[in-house]
Amino acid sequence: MTEYDIAVIAGDGIGPEVTREAMKVLDAVASMYGFKTKKTHYPFGTEHWLKTTEIFPESAFSEVKDKRAIFLGAIGDPRAPVGMIEYGIIAKLRFELDLYVNLRPVRCYDERLCPLKGKGPAEVDMVFVRENTEGAYSGSFGFAHKGLPSEVATQVMVYTRAATERVIRYAFELARTRNKKKTVTMIDKANALRAQDLWTRTFADVAKEYPDIKTEHAYIDAACMWMIKNPEWFDVAVTSNLFGDIITDLGAMIQGGMGIAASGNIHPGKVSLFEPIHGSAPKYAGQNVACPVAAILAVGMMCDYLGQKKAGAAIENVIVDLVRTKRIKGVNTGDHPTDQIGDMVIEELRALAAV
Image (cartoon, rainbow, N blue to C red; front, side):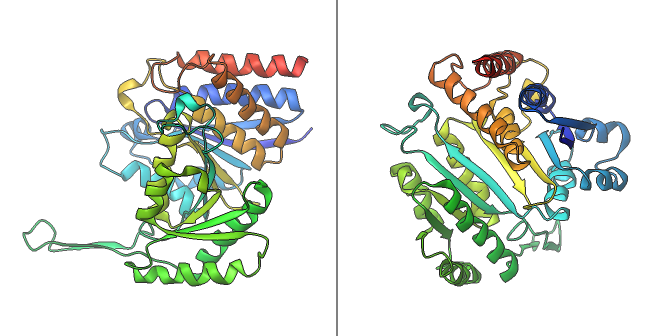
């Protein structure tokens, strides 16, 4: 029986609660679909830093690098300096493991979850491929005359041909496998950010190798507009790190909210990271009110990535059924007790397995 080594970092705030439910579901599908997981839990997050001053020691990071996958609950707490824990954990994993694809499915499971009038599952079914290691988040920044009236702050957007090409190529390959509109939309702002002409030219070059895939282009401001007006136009979209960070939150809202939005941070064939995209929401920690649907869907993405595609599909299909039959009445904080949703998903999985 295949066994997968999984690193689990529950993190801050509601992270431990949604992670608990996600791991319950992972255990359930593993037993149903004939595989095992060996989970190593790591305590890293703000609470651990406050107690020890450790953020992510290299000894533990070396262990994590040898795992098959990583699950992250949520990171962030106002008791720590802004960005310190986030950069020390999530950014460290993304950059040092070269997780160059941030994969964000945007799929509405039921029309009542979509805030757009007349839009639902038929119209909201797309996936964003966000470059995850370069751009404005590459770490090239600085200050001059800090704290003085003449202070200057700089943040450099860094793009390389190699990194741009590999993420664009991933998007084209994904469009082939989705069997939807077989369309890849490039989203950039090359008319104003002239360095992004590299994206425009690389996209055109890669597209020549995929004559079966239709291509579209939109500047980021127009793309946000069209996502609201005509989300059905989108199939696969590829974009830079900063723009992807922003537009995928817009996508989360049109699919139903942060409580249902999952993501993968992927380096194909290597250890990759899966997480809900919501924050840590410390004020709700320990109240059993956080929605774990996004975390459970992230486990489904992880199963799919590990090659357990039937298990991954089963998780998503169960969530779809629970939402459409209104047994999951909502995906916002407080709509259900956190542990109730985990139990509902497992019960439904077992019912399907028994058929």
